[in-house]
Length: 213
Ligand code: OGA
Ligand code: MN
Image (tube, rainbow, N blue to C red):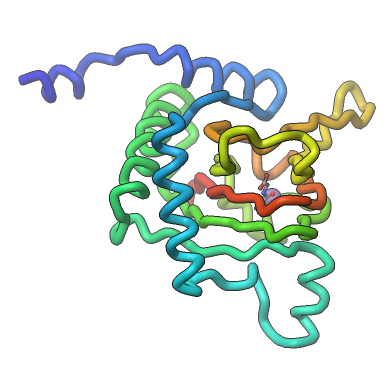
């Protein structure tokens, strides 16, 4: 009965409403404590475990020549997460993300049908140069989502800040976002150029995209 009620009633969610308002106003949103300390902990443990199993691949590398080029652009290692094979931590992650997605679909007509998420680990000294998250001739990615899994007490001196390059009335401004644990960043994939500054301490996150097709 209560489940049926949930299906019918629309309950306004202030946190999601703020994300929507932010994105409409400035194409990005930063949410503190989207994941609790406990949730960040289990997700970080899951990342570390899989990394120790050597499951991570160097991001987007094809061949040796390519490898050198890619490394000069981005130095993170990634592992795609299969929702169908999600472990307990990943289920917690997807429950929250799916709840946000269904809210967006109910309120914003974004038509998000697909999503893809990967763990990312930036070893000391690595970075991701300024880029945009959509490939040429591919406009399926609508929203980029990053959530940070670093340990509590992450300080600015650790580097690895995400910088969004914004257009404010024709003038470029920078929005600096530190990868504090539990933080969620959402931004429009097709418009916001951004970069990850060099990290001085291993940096952990889950990054993904909400897609229309
Ligand atoms: C990316 C990206 C930002 C971040 O993976 O495409 O831009 O803060 N990540 O990790
Ligand atoms: Mn990016």
